[in-house]
Image 1 (tube, rainbow, N blue to C red):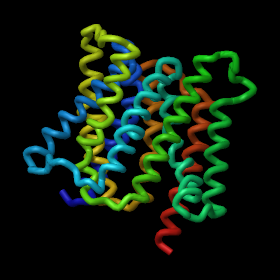
Image 2: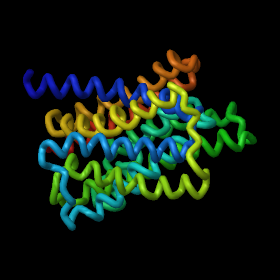
Image 3: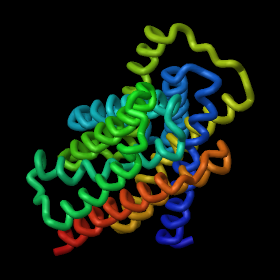
Length: 297
């Protein structure tokens, strides 16, 4: 199998695994506290990555120069993003959650202009406006129940999670790597696991899994496929395919989240969700296309 064919296969698997994981996480959260679910997911990811890297002789302590980005990725991209997503999923439909969480690329464009000196071109502004219009459609201010505190908090958490992820991406962009992202993966997951487990113990007490088969398979899916395998696959795909191809393909993840949520949880494919997804996807697509064009010029 050629490297390009392998990359396309991995990309398709990523879209399915991450898209399907939004309703799967919601299923798992019905059987254990949200912070403990996140801690177990990260812990399983650490073990899985260790089993992948150890036989290759690549399980070693990271160089000192990579520790700052490791802390950012572990605390923000892993721990905080997952915690916010899990808490939001308790009150927000899984399909809608996937759409809002994947607004991340919209926030990277203005952040890169503010902190990395990248130009905020008219094309990027147009993409940002399209994406923000999609968020406005999703919230539907005239139809949204602004007195529903939990729903308002949940939607806000998802947007905050997207902002947190965007901040981690900006740090990664500005970082000069001493090791490969794949070799650093178990360490960033470990850095994320420790504070989440401590917070879970302090706020939720002892873990209280119900021992159901649903909990077991959702945790295994999250720890091995959606965390360890997906991280390795994402690194591989990013190295083998053009950035624009990868960015636009990842737009299928929230679409997959909507479809899988409808299939697994009987969530309705509402016109509001579909319209919001279309506008956000268009905005992210414009931002990705402009970014690729600027790098190629």
